[in-house]
Image 1 (cartoon, helix red, strand yellow):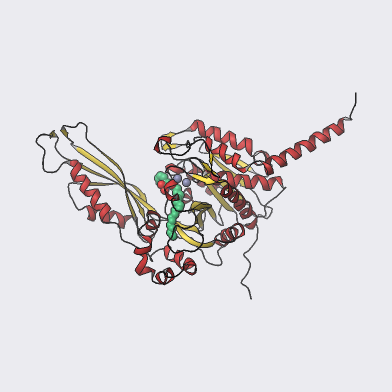
Image 2: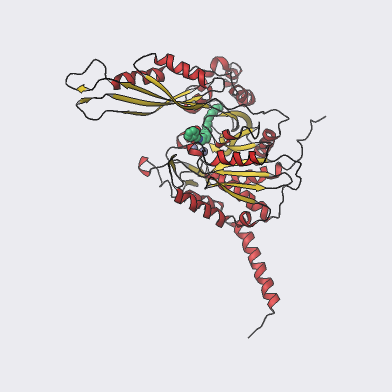
Length: 476
Ligand SMILES: CCCCCCCC/C=C\CCCCCCCC(=O)N[C@@H](Cc1ccccc1)C(=O)O
Ligand SMILES: [Zn+2]
Ligand SMILES: [Zn+2]
């Protein structure tokens, strides 16, 4: 029998393990990783109802598929608020101000019966797309960021600039345990961040009439919110002798007034003006003429579609309506909840005042439920490190894309980070094409396999691009 010296066997074993690790990271199909993440139903139903079993399973998954990250002596890993993750990657040049990448693990509920082409937690592949809840909101970023870091660690990379990765577990219920506690922890350590990048806007392709070619919108702010409860109380009674107006009818008229009298079109008063100034040269005739007079034509071009309309005004969404107990009993009580997303140029107080004056019916009780002002506008000029590095990275990976600032129409965990950094951006390089607006929190949420690979590359490049000390100076 052949006998090999122990050291040779040891060496061969070490080599085999090394090759396996490299192959596992570099050759493993990126889509498999996203797929396994999507299959875990990390659903946030409400503040009191989260799928904690799935959140624990997700934690185990991350440790299993990213062994370099979780075994590295460089990377510090902490669980925050039980299920959120904070990773600290110290740079070799501690005088460089750190940056932070954010994403979230939780997803909104999904029901196959609503009309999905594939079960929402199956990660089934159809025509080059992975279908499933979380594929664009926001497991593509969770897995993309970690896969990029795993690649870099595999290559023996040590960043020059320190960075943090925050993965929230309750963003879909506004981040009370995850983002809020990560921020508290970082504040207690005296951390200040050069920039923060979270989910948000995307690469728009074909969604704005007349815009030639794709445009990456980097969210430099996000809208505020106001949720109000409207209620009407009337005496109950027999439905055979009804009063002229029921509580339901009075309430229905009030919500109809809110829907019919939309909040004003404020195009030009917020950062959406800069969006179109940056994109103006990409509009073809006759839109170019329209673009140069956008203040006049914004209603024509932008108000027609729900996604572009959300850019120009405070939006009004009646989201809940409850009343009635029996078909022959006049309802004593009716209530509705209305959710407003506040345009950058308005305040919460102004919107609350407008709501009351629009309803203008003393029988309708208007109660403030929750809300906050629009977020501050982060800088997007030539000297702003974060914005310019994100922009450069978009160009590195997507050379054909025009980059412009935008307003994020939804809210993100990053809104809790304002005390840590003035420069907060909301962007993930997912492609957003006609029809895709209905996939966010809707049916048939999906991502193309190619896009997921682009996302991994984007974060891989961003981590390296962020390592420069200063932006290159102006050309002379
Ligand atoms: C040229 C104009 C084009 C405009 C296009 C607009 C395109 C929109 C593209 C992407 C959609 C953005 C989604 C942003 C992420 C939103 C994440 C989210 O859903 N957050 C929740 C958070 C929340 C807040 C408060 C209570 C509960 C949850 C949300 O906003 O509802
Ligand atoms: Zn999200
Ligand atoms: Zn969401």
